Image 1 (cartoon, rainbow, N blue to C red):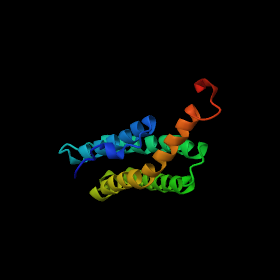
Image 2 (cartoon, rainbow, N blue to C red; image 1 turned 90 degrees about the horizontal axis):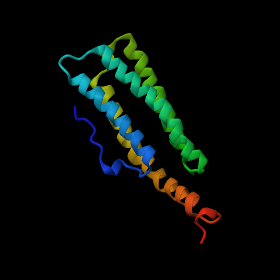
Image 3 (cartoon, rainbow, N blue to C red; image 1 turned 180 degrees about the vertical axis):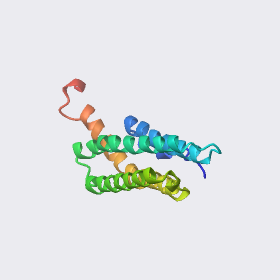
Image 4 (cartoon, one colour; image 1 turned 120 degrees about the vertical axis):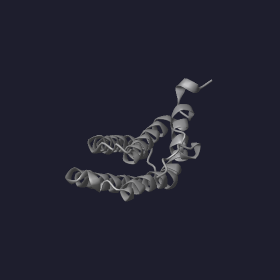
Length: 148
C-alpha cells in the first residue's frame, strides 16, 4: 500500500491549516508503515489510530472556526463532511478495540481516499476565500495600521 506523499497541490496556503493537514497525512502514513511491518505491534497500531482520531477531533473545530468566522458560504457542507468522517473513524476505533485485526487494508484505503479527496474537493475551495478574508482583515479599508 502506497503512503501519501505531501504535494504542494494539497496546500491551501494557510500555514496552520497546511501544517495540520500534513500531520493528518503523517499519522495515516504511520498507520500504513505499522501495518506493513512484519513485526506489527497491534497495541502500537491502535495507539496511532487513536492519535489520528484524537488529532482530527481536535483539529477540525479549528478549521471550522475559519469557515464560520469569515462566513464561508459552503461552511455547512464542509462541516458536515468533517462530522461524517469523525463519526466513521470513531466507529472504526471501537471496532478495532474489539479486535485489532479489523484494521484492514480497506480501512486504510478509506483513510487515504477520504483525506486526499477532502483536501482536493473541500479544502481547496475554502483556501482562496479565507486567504482573501485574512488579507482584507489585515490590509483592507478601515485598518488604521496600514493607512498612509
